[in-house]
Amino acid sequence: MEKKRLKSLAIVGAGGWGSALAACYGEVFAEVSIWAYSKEVADEINTYHTNESYLPGITFPVNVRATNSFDFLKTHDLVLLMVPAQHMRSVVRELRPYLKEGAVLVHGAKGIEKGTLKRISEVVIEETENKHPVMVLSGPTHAEEVAKKMPTACVLASPDEELAKKVQEMLMLPTFRIYTSSDVVGVEIGGSLKNVIAIATGIADGIGYGDNARAALITRGLAEMARLGIKLGANPLTFAGLSGMGDLIATCTSDLSRNRRAGIELARGTPVSAITGSQKMVVEGAHTVSGAYKLGQEVGVELPIVEEVLAVIEGRKAPQEIAPILMQREAQDELNYLEESSLNL
Image (tube, rainbow, N blue to C red; front, side, top):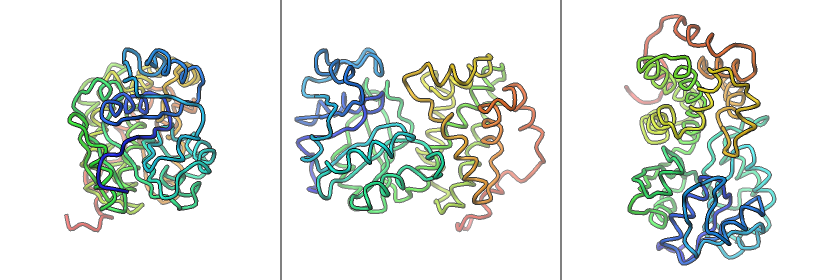
């Protein structure tokens, strides 16, 4: 791959995130091709240059073209995979025969696959038989703000630091700043668990708790994701960055956060099925929480916030029950999760 901006860009997934990137990159690439699962969405993008179902109020540049076929991937050296975590395996399995040899794949999903408990980069590598470089793009990136060209920073993680720098240069925009990282594990764990913590903070907000409770949940949620990440081999400092604290702040405090809104609705008594079934935009935390809990059990890491959110999602506890339980846990040292770190802190 040449170290320069490519003429064309391929995006798989026309949800909010994929559509936001298409709106931005359509202004700097000669062509942007985006795959949509729905023919109706593809037709709307091509006819009206809008996607009101997933990104209302945004108009796409005319050079953004949508399709329901994967044929267009055959000519692209860089492919952005922007589909929900739980659908990534089936989509990649379907598109794999169309990928150009050596094409770089950048995924933007935040979650842990149910059943296998794999991170999404592991899913993509497995389904492409390790024949393509795979990177992850993560961080505090509300699609609505990205599409409106509001200043945003995110992180691109890859074990190949040199290749990551080349992709960074191709995708960097004046209002979309990209940092690189070699810690794929840490970036993915941070991006996955922050959605679960956002549901917890939404529950606290919906109950009527204040800033103190929200700050406590965010901070202890950070400790939880770091504990799990460290156990899996992540760099502890990653969780102080954009895919850790940065994404937690945005997701746990913003009205744009689907996961926080889901927590608020749970606290108001809305059934889980109504929350997850009524939104076209996926509430990733509700799908990730069981996998995160099982992964923690598998590697011997305690995840109390994840455990309590899971109990609410599964209907075993009322939302009003979990905050007192979290506050009544046995007292311990605040930074005990760093004890397993290889850093000399």
